[in-house]
Structures are given as C-alpha cells and as structure tokens.
Amino acid sequence: MTLSTINSIAAAQLAIYVPLFLISILLAYRHGFRRNAGWLYIVIFSLTRVVASSLQLSTASMKSPPSVGLVVATQVFYSVGVSTLVLALLNLLGRVLESANAAATNTLFKSQHQRLAQFVVFVGLVLGIVGGSMLGGKIEDVMSGKTAQVSTPWESKAGLGLILAGFVAAALGAIACALQFGSVRHEKGERRLLWTLVAVLPFMLVRIVFSCLGTFGSDAKFRSFGRSSSYPWLFLGMAVIMEIIVVVLLEAVGLTLKKKEKKGGTHAAGLSVRRRCTKSSVGCRSDCQE
Image (cartoon, rainbow, N blue to C red):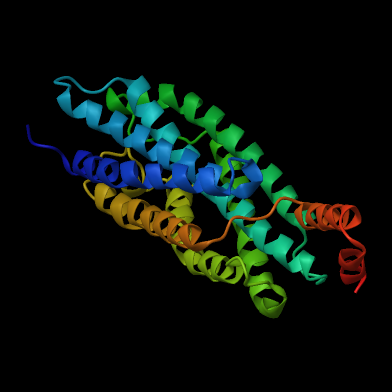
C-alpha cells in the first residue's frame, strides 16, 4: 500500500509523538499534573497529535473517500492542539513569574495577566471545537464537488483570534521577564526555562500564522480540504516541524528543571526545626536562637 504525502507525514508524526508523549508523562509526574505546572498541557498536546495522526492514517486503508466525520475529527484534534500548546507556554511562564515574585520584583507582566490570558485561550478552545463541528457539512459539499469554496464559521475565526491573543500575551510576558532577567532565580532552572520560552516564540508564531492563513484566508494551499498539492508541504514546514521543535525544546529543558517546592514548604521546614530544637537540650536552643 502506497501512502499519500499527507499520510506519510502522519506516519512520521506518530513515530515522533509516541516517545514525546511518554516523556511528557514523565515530566508531568515529576513536576506535578496540576494545570498550572504546564506539563499537563504538553501531555494533552502530544496526545492530540498521536490521535490526529492515527485518524489520518486510518484513511489510507479506505478504498472509498473517507467519511466527513473522520476528516472533521482529524482537523478538530489538530486545531485543539494549537490552543493546548499556547496554554503550556502560559503556564510555564507562570513558573518564571513565581520565581521573580519570590525575589520581590515588581515585574511588568503580572500573574493576573497570565491568568486572564489563560481564560481567553480556554474560550478560544471551546469556540474552535464548536466551529470545527459546524464545518463538517461544508466540507462534505467540497468533497462531493458541490462547491469549491468553504466559508469558515465565525466561531472558528473568533476562537483562533482569542488563541492568537493568548499567544501574544505569552510572548509579551516572556519578553518582559527577559528584560528583567536578573530578577529570575536560577537555582531550579527558571532562567533556562525563560530563555527556552523566548526561543520557541518564532516557531509558535509560524505555526499560528499557518492556522490564520487557512482560517481567515481563502487560499486552498492552506486548507486540508482544498485539494491543493501544495498543502501537505506547507503543512509539514509551517505546522508539523514547528510544533515538533517547540515540544522537543520544552521537554528538553523540562528534564533539566528541579522539582518546584510546594508553597509554604520552607515555612513548614522552619517550624519543624524549631519544634525539634524546643524538645532538645538547652545548648541546641541557644544554637537555634543564634
């Protein structure tokens, strides 16, 4: 069985994202599965790529054209992945902000800005899913030859616009922290994390531009259902490779980070020392007071 170009790309994605998915689980286990740890979103993103590429490969064994539902499901998983990757950037930026706040630094980009950007991206994620499901009927008309053009639902446009706004917030936050680099602690690797976040911004920008060209534009080269021979190569260069670079860089720095202490951990440790000193000898109490 000969694979088409797009199916060959899906096979390569599957081979790459399975180990990346396993590494993301390891990182989430090490640093915590909390959403604000950021690594949970890397897990979700890697999973969406495994599922999307598997769905795409399933069309290779079909003699007849794939069902509209399968095509729509594949595209929804691809679109959802972009929002989760932006959420990962925002949450990892949160760790850098906590480090700066611990140093009593008045950062230009606040934690409140980060949380607001997260909410905006969440809304964009929901709108993107709704828009993707509404696109199903229009894609069916294209596949049946009834029409050559598909108008993108406003939900998809609004959702991508909010995701773009969230990415801009993440970029501004990373740049603002970089300008105040001295305020970021380096004991647990936050400075390495900051520079990694700055480094992945151009790749994420290219990825989001690709989505914008397909959503807001009408050029068939940027649409999976546009039947353009150029689409697979543009998809590979502007989407697939960009995402892989971002995930590899984030996971690489994640493996070097030390586990973040729980809030109040230092205070609890101090109380424990004082209790032990109280129960011990007079000499120990005098040492503690010193």
